[in-house]
Image (cartoon, rainbow, N blue to C red; front, side, top):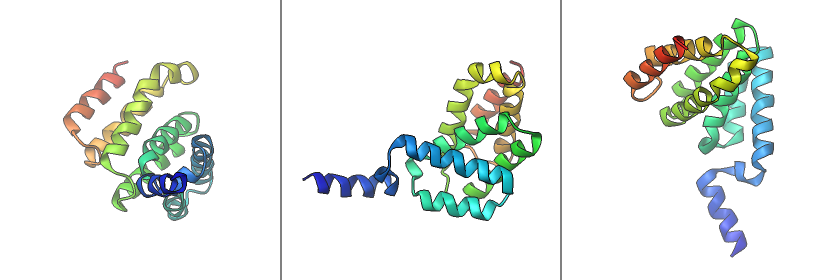
Amino acid sequence: AASHFGDRRRNVFGRSTDVSIETLKQNITDMIREYFTSADAAEALRCVRELDAAPFHHELVKRMLVLSLDGPEREQQLAYTLTAALRSEELLSAEQLALGCQRAVDAEPDLRLDNPRSAAILAAYIERCCAEDLLPDVDTWARTAAALGGA
């Protein structure tokens, strides 16, 4: 029965369930840091496929946004570029993107302690995602971006 549950869990959540959530989060962080260093979107896409963790892609979005806040503007551009590529390749659903953005928005008051520009940076990212129709319910997200921009 236990092995049946493990097989079923793998079918629902992907191979990512073979590792702990903390390990998955660390793998995501390592992949993002490597991408920010190399700017190799093709390699990042390969790594996302290899992670086989679609139900956790919101974590990828949130971590990418949070890590880009601490880096130069280049990393913020790379975060958007990878997001667009993930959506184009259908590796990232609009819903997982929205959930990742929402988690970053929810964390913004804490993020502001480390980077006072965090609200403006998140707003710019969301505005770009809206402009390219990457997020569902663009009107709601546009209002969220406007509210952040005024924070």
